[in-house]
Length: 229
Image (cartoon, rainbow, N blue to C red; front, side):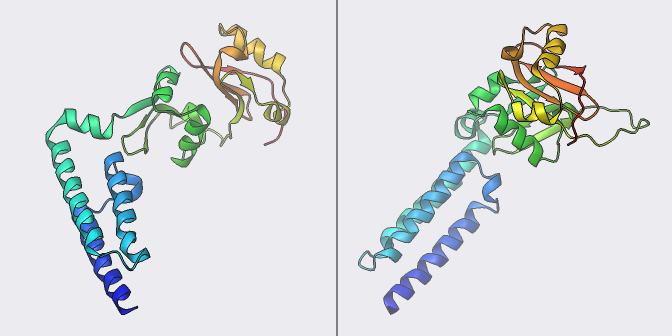
């Protein structure tokens, strides 16, 4: 029992020093290679603690090795743009002047629902308030707001998703007291054949509908709604 206590204490101190040497980033701010190294360190550090017959140096040596590997890779990433792109990837624009950028979403293995949730977690309930949105290499979203006239007060509105990736959200259609025919009329007026051409569409309490097509620039339109949400 005493040996296990001593081994655990030594490993804790070594891992603590390793984490301090690697920097003060939180998990949410780590680059992919940093997160991988941190997870591997946590795994190998537990091996001698779980099995008292394994010598503790079998854990300390990998921890020290991985720590210096992280420091070296971070140094290389600072000095070489090419190396940084290989290790961390590139920031991706997911919302631009044309609306939602589906090609970049595919490259990041994200879907529209993931994007909407990420937008909400950044403090924006309405995609129409965003001019540009970028997913940084650490996974966080940076947003550039759309310019508005500060002299014209606007009421707080809550968008209700009507369609995603060519499919209707029937529950929200009922909630907004509208139907597919009403929405399709607005879509056809803006050059779309129907919901199959829609990547994302939502509507607000004042009837303003935001549509980002699968191809082409986003647009807004007025539709009749009567639900309460």
